[in-house]
Image (tube, rainbow, N blue to C red):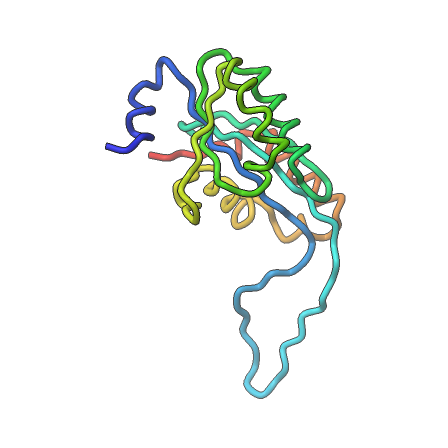
Length: 176
């Protein structure tokens, strides 16, 4: 039995959340495309600001705590969202996260003992295992299902649609 199964069995006494960040922009990222034989496919290149979303998703997929940042998410922004999150916890809470440099930086690491005293424990995933982080399913659903082509007509519209999705029941995930 893995650590997560044991923790989920204790679910009445603890909370479990999955944490990660994801970026959104107007830049086109096509994994494949169709074109007529002997014609050249041209996709205009564009530069766009990024909307980065940092979030904590509960193990049952029903609670989301998120924060939007325009531009780069660095250790400071990550520490800030963890501070906001830890101020809201009501019982012992485990947060599952990856080993990204912003999650292991000196600034971030300096906060871990204080967060632990406030009831927050961190569980780092093995390297290169995003499939173990349930919040990845949320990012995938937002990108592939809930953002529509009209969401990408302007940066303002993209940000607005993301805010709406994150605030709505749309982003609740059913893991069963």
